[in-house]
Structures are given as structure tokens and as C-alpha cells.
Length: 455
Length: 109
Image 1 (cartoon, chains in turn blue, orange):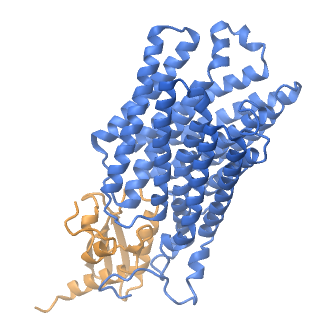
Image 2 (image 1 turned 135 degrees about the vertical axis):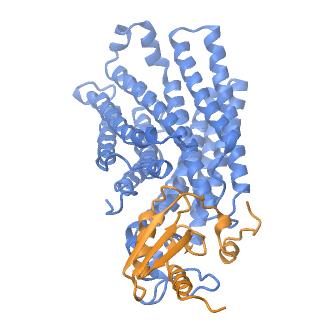
Image 3 (image 1 turned 30 degrees about the vertical axis):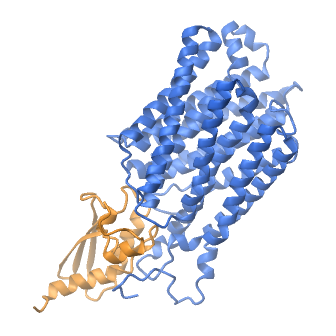
């Protein structure tokens, strides 16, 4: 917890720490050989790994960032700082219970109940977190574009966790499926695609787009107003994910030509939205007024490239009927390349910024203080970001070629990169580099001297 | 023309505020163009300023920095800071020195 003003989310640093630990644990499950790629994707350890990455890492990361940035977007405070803490505790304890439940699958006994119990706890926790965010989001009129993306993302989060909870119950009590009726039984058996679509697409991607529309212009001094293109991304993206999700569910319960057509229209709208978003991001980078881009935004280009590659690969996979075979590659590109890539790059700046506020904010005006960029070592971190994105690219390529050992080795390098980045975040938080740049207590830190200024 | 005492005091206040930085941009708030106006009456200083973005998490700290720095000036008995959002800040508000530091063209929109 950091003792700060109402504009700061006190529990965001703790949420980021838990998220990073979960990220490392999820990758370690894969690298150790217990989970995919050496084990089947449907193996209990693989399910534990995927949910550690999606709930423990990405969902917590998103909430940590949103608890901090929704008040920035809306200029309104969260209703309480307790809600983020409760969300963290609920998600973390629910995830631990879910992992225990996954590992107990097929063994029977009371331990199997850990899965629906954990799923229920996660559902309650994200409802609480979403509620804390909805208060300022709904109060803001007119809602800015980035806030609308977040609202849409939260809607899909709700769909994702409710569907996931239904899976948890069905996996734990297999007899329940048929008892609920044939349509619902099929849904619980075949609805995985919709669960993934709502989670990776609706929740993570729409929210990441919204946050990026706030952070990228702010840090690069680019125009905030995304104009008609930004609105088109929102309408096409949120609409596309919703239509594809609805048609996917409808197709499972009651297959038909109309449902199939709606699903294709939804998919096309998603591709259009992501294509327009990438065009807009390129426009945003070109129109920046800050010519010298900081490392976190230079490295973020790797995340946008991963998203572009995933869109092209998905198009090809659908066109040639290889979607199932290429699903692991797509998930790697989207989860580790696009979403986690954007996450680790933006954390590099956000952690330094929060560290500055908590450490130097109250000293401002009393004596010279370092800048946020003095808390990081950009030259020393370039190679780490390169290692991260290169290892993810190799892992994705190896997954596409069916080389599980190479995928596993590449993910070991990803884990190494995450560990090195975590060390850099910790150093930024402790002002390690700022201290190193301060040989004497009374010597001013390297504040750039403007022409004509006294220093 | 000899500057009036009031002008001198305002200039002095602006100079003092060059010690306060926007932590994210890492540059002083005067040359960034965040200080819209300074009014001095007796020992009381009223500062009208803005932030680079509404709801900036650093707002309370920057305002606090302005208050603390000006309070150190001789004869100052009170500092009041008003944060406004109109006119909206943009890099056009920066001084020539700040634009040169961030490599922003003088004619940038």
C-alpha cells in the first residue's frame, strides 16, 4: 500500500506484484513440462496454467491499471480504496482454489469442489472490481472514448466469468450437463470458443485498446482525440465481439444458416476493428509531438506487431480451415505477444511513475527531485524487451511447426525476460537508479536545465 | 521602461516555479506552459495553472510543490492555486526552450 492522495490507487502496486508473481508461475508451469506444450492443452495442469495467466496475470494487471487510470480518464475518484483490495484478495484466493480444483479433476472427492468454489470467488471478486470502476465510468458524461472501451470490456468480463463458472460446475459434476437439457449440455461441452472469444477478445483486447488510447497519447504528446477512426474501432470491435459471441452460443444451442452468417459477420467486424486500430496506432505514433519516444512505447511496437500477426494468421487459418490446429499459436501471439507484451512495456513506465509519486511527490518544491525517467535504466532494459518479444515469436513459430520442446525452451527465455523485467520494476520502485545518480545529498539530481532557468 | 514592483514580484514567482517539475515530462512547469497566470496582492499569491491531462495522478503533488516553493519566497504569507482546464493545455503552450528539449516543431499543431 502507498500512502498518497485520492488520485492514486493505493493497492495498485500490490496488485501488480501479485500479477507478476502469477505470470512467472504460469510460465513456470509450462517450462517445467507439467503443462502445455509438453502436456495436452486440455490436461489439468494446462488448464491451471492458462487460468493462472488469464486470471492471475492479465485480469489482475488490467484491474490494477484500471483502478489507477479510470479516475484519470473520468476525473472522478473510485468509491472506495477497499474495493480494489477486496478484488485482489478474492481473485487471488479464488485462483488458488481453482488451481487446486483443476489438479483434482478426475480424482473425485471433495477436492474437486475447489474448482466451482474458486470460480465463484473469482466471479464475486471481479463483480466487485467492475462495480468500483463502473461508479466513476457511469458518472462521467459524456464518456470519453477510452472509457467506452473499458465499459465494453467489463461487459465481456462478466460474460466470460459467468460462462467459466458454468464450465467449472459442469466439469466438477459431469452428470449435471444432461440434467440441464440437451442445448445447455452441448453449450457446456462446446462453448470453449465463446469463453476464449469473450475473454481474450472482449475483455482483454477491448480494455487494452481503451487503456492504450489513454496512455499512448499522454506519454508521446500525441492528439487524444481519435476522431471517427477511434469510434469505428469501438463500434466494430464491441459489436463484432458481441455478434460473434451471441452467434457462437446460438449456433451451439440451435445450429442454422442464419446463425452461421451472423458469426461470420461478427468475425469480419472484429478483423475490421483490429485492422483499423492498428492503422490508428500507426497514425498516433506518426502524429506524436514528442519526437524521442521513451523505451516503453518503443518496445510496445512489438505488442502491436504481435496483434497484427495474430489477425493475419487467424484470417489464413479460417480461410484454409486450420483454425483448430493453429489455435495454440494464436493464443500465444495474443496472450503473450499482444496483451502481455503491452502489459510489461507499459508497466515499465507506470511502476516508475507510481514510485515517483510515492517517494518524491511530497518533496516537490522543497528541493530538487529526479524525473520519472531517472528511476529507470532504459539502455540496460532494451535487451530485456528484445529478449521478451523474440522468445515469444520463437515460441509461437515453434508451436505452429509442432515443435513442443522448442516452444518450451523459448518460453523459458520468456520467463527469464519476465524475471529480469520484474527486477527492473523493483529497482524503479526502490529508486535504485536515482540513488546511483546522486553522489551527494545536496547535489541536484539531473533535472534538465531549461535555457534561462536558474539551475 | 523600469518594471513596476508588482511585475518584478510576478517574474520572481515564475522564476521560483521553475524549480517545480512535471515529473512525467521531467521539465519545469513554467516552460511547459502549465502556469496560466500569477496574481500577487500583498503577501498573497494566486496561481492559475493547468495539468497536461485532466485527472493527472500527479496533480495534488504538483499543486503542493507550487505551494511549498512559493511559500519559501520572502514576504509570502499565502499561496492559493487554482487548477483550470480551459484553455486546454497542448504542447503549443511550451516555451521555445521546452519545445527544443522535446524536439517539438515551433509550428506543431
